[in-house]
Image 1 (cartoon, rainbow, N blue to C red):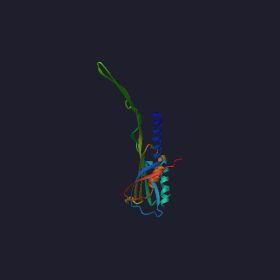
Image 2 (spheres, rainbow, N blue to C red; image 1 turned 135 degrees about the vertical axis):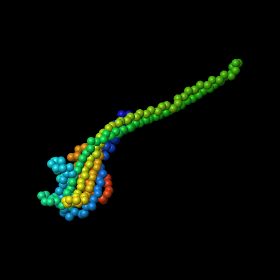
Image 3 (tube, rainbow, N blue to C red; image 1 turned 90 degrees about the horizontal axis):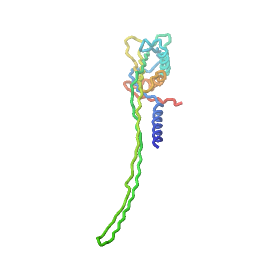
Image 4 (tube, one colour; image 1 turned 120 degrees about the vertical axis):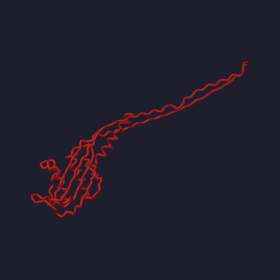
Length: 219
């Protein structure tokens, strides 16, 4: 019985974790003075010049470019762009998290009965009386418990995007940051979700941070 209950509880915990893993959650902060697009041309560059030749950056830039196109912007190609879009992304070294799981059960039962008897008789030496009896008190309580402590690493993933006019000294038109935490540090796998979160309700309300939840494909 004990092993069965523990097994069912573990299944429940695993099921809960599986349910949680079917969504991608992130916090998206945005500040902007971005006018509605009118077909402005854009070029996407890394905030870190060292990533200019990075194939990883080129992959992420293509994702962002496709979302910008849906908003009404067009790639500049070989022409001078109207807007400069800067991208930056990172994942930290992670933080060790400790979680405890406690579970247990107990049972009890009881019974009792008793009886007594008595008799007496007279003799020359006086009246003699006898009494006897026995009984069983309430019997027992029993319980079992167990616990488990597990550790894992939680990573913080970030994506930031800045849009500014291609004119020296002009202030930024858009600044957005996506931040999420989780057990994966695989940016290549997570980046499509982070880009989608950034463009959810784009450009958003300036000066706010929104929690964006994306339903993942369970297949």
